[in-house]
Length: 303
Image (cartoon, rainbow, N blue to C red):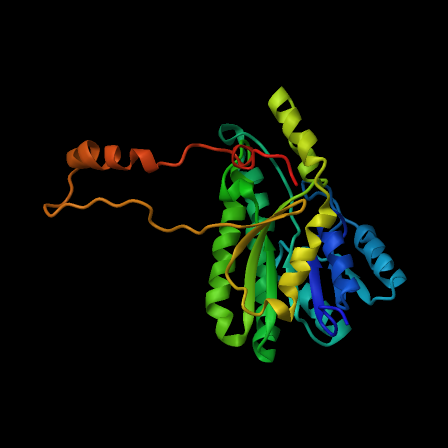
């Protein structure tokens, strides 16, 4: 008996990297899988069904059941067709893994409107579109699970990724809202910030010794290490796990904190700009967060 026996799961971006590993592991645990992948390049250009079909062939070789889907999550109607494809093929839907993504890295003061909009369109709007399409069948059957891929680029920060970071921190807010709005229907929504060497991560610049060292470390992180946690979140064994943010890196699993007040000051007289400058900023200075990047916080070698 597998953890996902009898369940139907959609994995977006399932043709390569982390998505492929999740699709395969979900199938190994008994799920029927709709492998969605546009088949484009790292920036989202082009498209073909080959990568998704290749994963479907792997799943069938394992004795599982899967279908390939080439619709784009970045379009409202096509996102709904992804969900309908799963319903038509398998008769139900139990889990959605929002994993598809693109990168268009550029330092902020040189980033174009198109580079910002395209990344947000895929990651944030696309995840909303697919989730919204799945919400109706989930609500009708009083159960369902969402797993959304976020990133420490949004949770912590990175250079040259204002578009990606904004989308990925937005996904955290989206997931929490889904969790709160749909918990009465037995629907769960959680995020994973994965650390793995993939096609997208392979586009990270490595122009300085520091960047080269970081990239060499990332190359050691296998996407196969991410998928077991995603599969566990999809299972009924995670029925009480909802609205959380996790991280996975090699053999490490992290639970991230969520924003809460850490320092407060008050006055009975009310504040003016002058008194804020005189009293508030100095009082809070020791609690300010430094401008760390993800690599500064995760400074130890993967375990």
